[in-house]
Image (tube, rainbow, N blue to C red; front, side, top):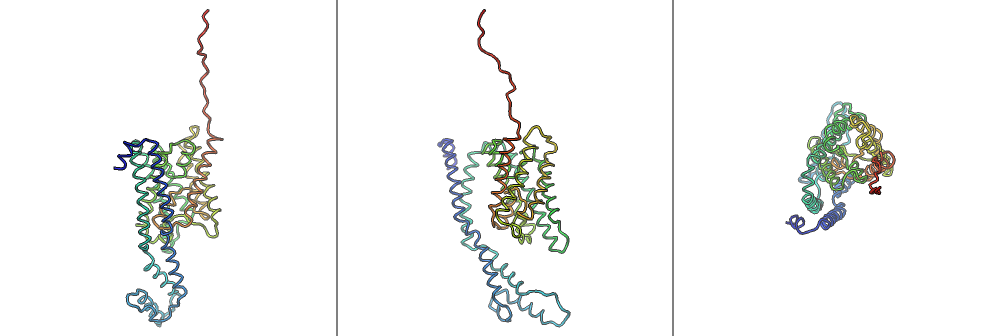
Length: 379
């Protein structure tokens, strides 16, 4: 009903203003509700600290009815009292604390769930209105949006999935892939995506690339926005699929990027900006610029991603892509310093686009000769 009214009785300019107001309302509501989304993390830390301060030496300490810790503590004490060869040293207090965290703080509180649910309503309404108003653009470019969705999904499933698989290998005592193996996975999946979807949508699979294209007038804002929606959708789908296939990888937040040990926020933002600058610059130089050899574009972009992960992996995770971080972060609920992986890549991507357009792109020259069309004087 609302969409029908907007499309038939409201001017195009007014529709744009209404959409912007809805998006602003959604953003304000998100900011207002965001503290509740992380309440469970604070409760988990509080529970861990509480169990850390409390000794667990008495047998009847967890003998309350319905307390699952009693059986675990009793088993631990029985094992420690048995007369046999020395067992590996196990800190049963730590085991009990971890069990307590899993059993008491795994689920979100009701208020947090309510805040999360209410957060969805303005977002869904705004997206619904936008999609309906832009239905002509969506239908005409549907294959492009599907390509961006599938490409970003493949990036998350293979790249972040490699991080999850590496964790499983390390957990089982095997040699994992390591940073080099993970970097190779990210680089080669980008090569495959570039050659598979490049001729369809350009294979952006990265909001930083799309925003840079919009800023440099290589893409209109409407199409760019729908590209980003498709990319985030594919990343979220990939993140939740990894959550289902690698449940134990929740311990590493499903492969989302985190700050390295001792790394400051400024260092991480600069690292992401620099490696994304290099990535987007190569995209412009190999894909956008018609003087380049297009056959080598996908391979060149994949190499930059590989090197970017290797260089930035220990600092900021080497993301270069906000969607690559957002998908696993949403699935795992880990949003610590999440803005780093939006500010850094977007700033670096926009700067790369502006630099290339102003200093390296071929300027359009008017090669037509001036023709004098003034009427000639009669002789």
